[in-house]
Length: 563
Image (cartoon, rainbow, N blue to C red; front, side, top):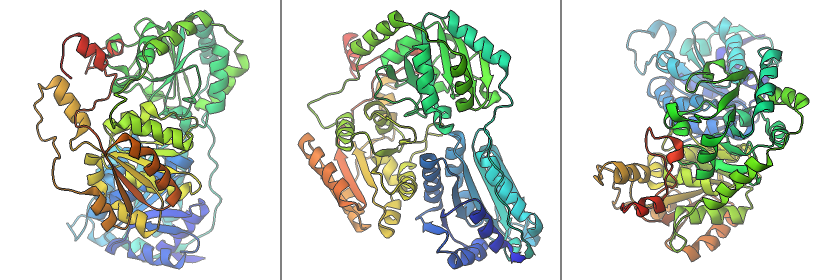
């Protein structure tokens, strides 16, 4: 049957099982939005306050479900406003399809009104992208985009469609989506055997799990693997929940703000088993001194990550779930009780600590964990509050921490929380932000209230750019260059003006009743928490220092340093 390009876009979305889209209309994409109007009973479109909010919402939707997130924008500034969200999602391997419309084919390359080469702009920050200027190629391009976004290592695919294509007609025949098959053809028996040999010979194994474990839904296989190897486990920020944070064998996050138990344990181990992680610089610190006593076994779906940042002794390339399943079939039961006892002693000796007699970020997050029984989905922005959320909320399941890891995108969390809540209506969804992050995209509170999406926004309001200030305090002689936000913005009044219920917390005893009421109301809520400007995230590893040199506040004070 003959359909317009806009109709084909809608039919292809339905083919892929898409029932939720986030976006913002404009001239070039009007034909598509007109068709969305006709299909509003099949596809729910959420109008965000800004295109960046749409991309982050689609990202949160995807991370929390494993499905492909979809966002839309018009040409020119509409498309470029998606760029930060595209980069954010792609760096963290999030399956997302961004559909943009451009000027008509005859106007391309002529500096036409609202014309931008969005394919050229996004080429370095997408897994793949397309410009479609022939309606006959539209359907197959969209199908391919969804397949690429989900297969292997997931990522972002952008499809830019010229306006004439959205109105031109072509034959359309419905097709079933191409099945997504776990990548296993690269899993070699010789690599499995080498891995098993390394595990057999080691005395002090340590398992480091990353976002790949979450993406591949490999939590059960990881649990079995940990039990058989009999090793302690740490994770990256993206790996949270892949291995339950409530398990005794879990030692906490690794890296710049990781626990001392994890950092010291990895530095002492003789075999580091890295699963679904890319060894980012925030994890490894000084690469030359990282895990220098260990052989490294790296398991990852993406061969490009192996030997990129850390030299490995052996590797297995393939889907993490599939690799762990094959290893588990052949692994005997090992006993490393003496090594584990040593690591447990490190856990006990170096617990996470904070000032218990003040209103602080860690206190608020611990109370949130207690009240929600660890069953909420937490989204965050980026900074100190993000690290506190990683440290003090225990994530018992995957896809319960939604945060920007690779890009470190300020302003990410609120849009992501909206997308997460839309996809998880039965879950409590809480975004934890700093005041600096919140003010970047706080207009999305209006999106939450427009659709009555009951997200809870917690602002760790310290009137500064907290993480940057922490660095300025420790490494820049307390020269606070443009990090003080001590202005006249009242976030309670601002949030109320956008239709949300808002609270201000200034002391510990207010935290629990406010959180409980916020959860019970089931409406958009903003909580402005007034915390100290000089609260810090500890432990910390100095830039380019080895991770075994992680220091805490008491270490600095023991050296007579003012922190």
